Length: 433
Ligand code: ZN
Image (cartoon, rainbow, N blue to C red; front, side, top):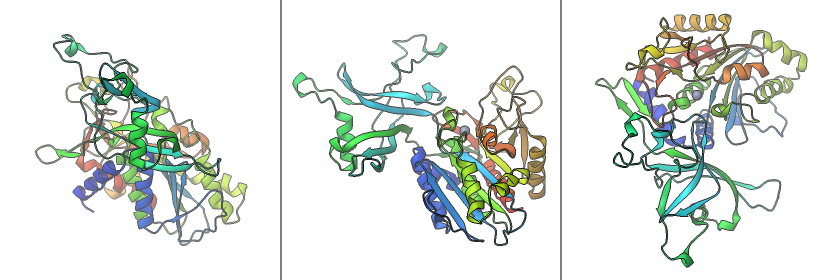
């Protein structure tokens, strides 16, 4: 694939990946097309050399792995991880609010969203819904994506808030409620369950069947190429679908004849990862251990994997902003289009392990992949990512990489078109070499 094909592939994941559940389903679809077989934690695994497998964990986390044709000695594991979630707004239970002639939804903020970028956007909703079932311990699960915009959060006009260009503090409860319809003037005709009915209609079920849901709002924009030479991509959800797509392509294409290649797509990175389907769970190490148990190798062999396994944590980094260059580190300046970032922080908010960093640099040099090093300004902080968290539970050498990004956590972010190809190339080489 060439540069534009890698970019187009990313943008089709953005279009399909409208919730962590839909991102996971899209990853699953690509894996099935590449011949991966589905496993289940509740069943015995009968793995074979040369096999390609995956399993879904609670709908929004997925692990996939390939076993080398000559897997027998060394038993080295190479693991790449990315996250399926993105900051935004989530619909609360009993969300219907009807006041001042409008119908609105009660929502809460998920993760570190830049709130004002959610205003004046056509928004839709997607996620999963649980329905009544005969077996009370296994409710029926349905995915829903309305696909069309039906909500928006209007700004306040400048005439009413004359200070608006001096910066506006948005209250997460009061100012972020989307409008989705007009109220009815007649009190008697008021409908307390207008959203539940809308949702039931979409699912073609009775509203009484719906018990609960995890539904998020999403920006319905598709991605665009910008710049005079199409050198930029502007799109929703680049954090972290750029990494998800690179890891999927990497695990499919990056075959190795010995050892095990493992890819993990975790949910809940944007809220700290410390959940059952986040990177701060036992999921990764449970999958790694089960692979060896299926080969009749016990816990001792599993503990041995820590010595030579490696984790590549893939997530976006901060690019230098041309209007605010002084916000970045004075000697490590990351620019869009100039290659992937290898991210370091002595606080370990990014996994910082010079041995793992050196491995990554040698991979990039061997494959002529451009890279840049990222560190924070000493008087600033940036976010963290799943690398250090996952490696606390599966203690192997770890490095954080990802494409540089502008406007991180905006409802529309910006990256360099060439960087997607570099990232895919880097993850594939990490698995293959
Ligand atoms: Zn991220």
